[in-house]
Length: 266
Image (cartoon, rainbow, N blue to C red):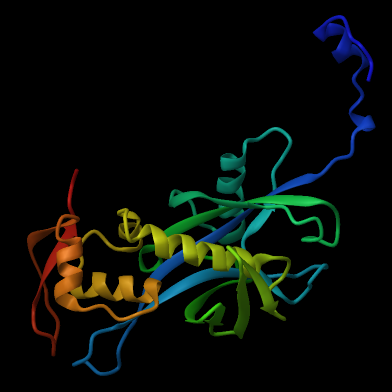
């Protein structure tokens, strides 16, 4: 190691080419809740918990699916890059997001050494005004856990996907996956687990809802994310301090009118 007498002396001798480089990416796990109109007017609309995926048009993994993502430019911070990538990849902007996790396995990308900072975003896609890119599609999420095994099924109008993960110690490893590029199956799984944990102690779930909603709708969203049925009385005790009743009523042919609630203002 050379002995430099000052910061100036060090900087004058510094050559970036002497150091190995890696690239930094940002990947977006965009979750949504949406409705499917029921053909039976006496039934409530079905709700789906979904994630946005983009079909790859180039190598590597051409024809497979990945999360909206891209590289962080040398002159931008990570959050700005996430906003830019979100807009370019999906046409979405000004939605809730937070950093999820940093993925840096040495072999996660066959092109070069790439570390990615993943982000999680939550939206109510029924209220989206922008059009998605033509190769971006919403995939409905259905998952189940059996012991240390996590099986996730993703379905869309264009393709159905399934991946499987095993829990080893405190982490998961993907053991079955043939349609999702890079390590994005693991990123999706990490996002599901993060969201499932956060709705238990935060108000983050309200980013998936319109301003006004029924308690049945809210419970359904919890059940979709948690992957299990909830008892209505216990659920309502759990969320009573998070919502407030309004004077609005949800009507509709064949339905008993329901009182609408909204997120309680702090």
